[in-house]
Length: 81
Image (cartoon, rainbow, N blue to C red; front, side, top):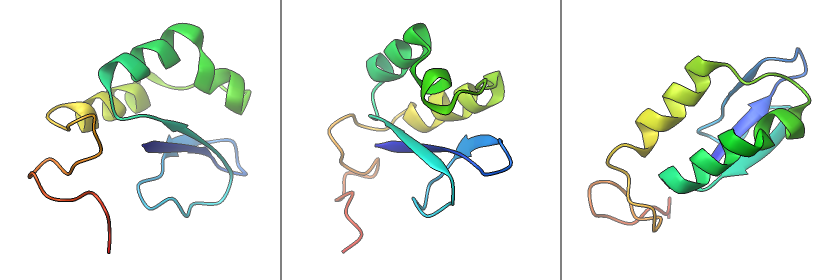
């Protein structure tokens, strides 16, 4: 899952650590999920704020080559432990 967060200052950004303060929303790591979130404006509705094209491009770049089943791109486990 990709975590996106709106900071208390109102800036929307990716949160790779999952620890940034603010309101968070998750999008699964598949191109289809991202397309649906964009089309339905799900992130903008969740944050009540616009989501910039730069952020969407960054999310797309993270999906390039990333398996949608949760496995790490190098074929290893996606877990931290």
